[in-house]
Image (tube, rainbow, N blue to C red):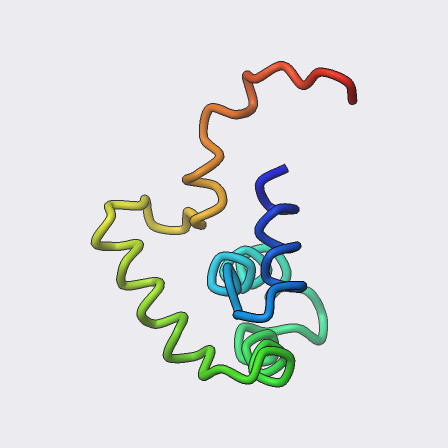
Length: 91
C-alpha cells in the first residue's frame, strides 16, 4: 500500500517527490532481472525525472546508514514494518 502511494507521488507530482524510495525499491527487486541493472535503472530515472539521480541516491543511501536501517533494507520496507499485522477493511 505504501509503495503505491510513494509511486503515485513520484509519478504525478510536479516535484520529483519520493523518487529515491521508488528507485531504491526497484533496484533491490528488479536489478537482477535479465536486461536490467542498477546503472540502467538509474539512467532511466535520470531520463524520466531530469535529476542527478546518482547523486540523489548516494545521499539517500548515506541517510539510510545514518538512520540505522539494516543493510539491504529499503526505505519502504523499513517504513512498512508492522503493517503486515494490520487488518485491511473493505478490500
